[in-house]
Length: 131
Image (tube, rainbow, N blue to C red):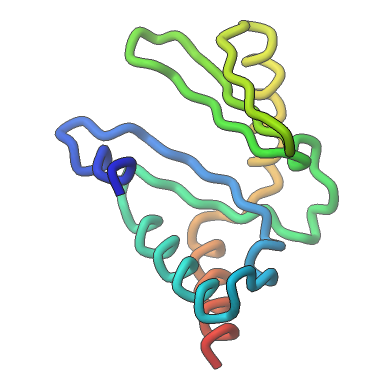
């Protein structure tokens, strides 16, 4: 809850999330839990500083979708990346590592659905899991 509070600050960051469509079909915690999480995701996606886009299953295996990673531009203009694996996470400001993951991000985003389509697909999934 503290993390989301930064979006209520006078100068909130921009947040772009690319999410694999497959998560809409994996009811971890049960259908009600997933439906609640998806409703919350739709609520977050209404914020002007938050963009959520689904990477459709039809895109196949897009380079970079094998593990989670986050790119961040800090207040001083420097960039860092956080990459997760099953066993650990790694944060680095190494220019080459950041550049590699930025290219992967661009490749993934090129396959992602537009925001409006994403919201409709998520809304359809909510209806599926609540019926």
